[in-house]
Length: 272
Image (cartoon, rainbow, N blue to C red; front, side, top):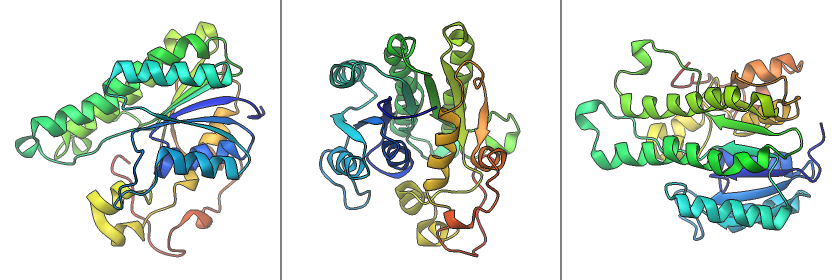
């Protein structure tokens, strides 16, 4: 399945994993809608919707930068409308935007709880809702949520239950949509990394440069997304994929090129 002239709506695509997926698909000739908040660069985070759009165009894709805070339904509607006006429809939705706060219940503030659920859960839900009418008319349409397989083992809930709840909800949205949209041949899946990924969140919130050096680059998720999203949408749906497994099924087993520090011991992701 070619991505040429396909329109891909990606939340949180101004940096990190979202931008990596945008660049990977943009290089295949896709139209990328960069839907994110950043219009002015934050030195700690890097990147804006405009810088990401330029990078996408530099690798051969077409890009539309749209400022969108997915906590607000009116901004979602506006972003989807602009995407459809610019490119004529939406073929793929990548729900990547996410907030993280790894705190036990006693130390979880209402603001942090609300932010994670407003972005991870509510945002993902309503971006999906607004895109569905166009996905139904899309070419090999897919929804891909960046969220982990659901595992009720207490160790994945203890110490950061608010964050875990929100990420599992993203996966539940994908699985629920796979059932609701199957008759329309719209695929819905989740994707998660086996190891930590070198992003601003890992550097600033989780483990600094030490953890970055034990991580893989966002490119591994971009490549995994590439293989998932080109599969027939009528067949590849209702899965919670792990990046390594996706690549392995494509015959890619040497993953050293994705390591930030070649040869370093990699740090397993939070949910695996």
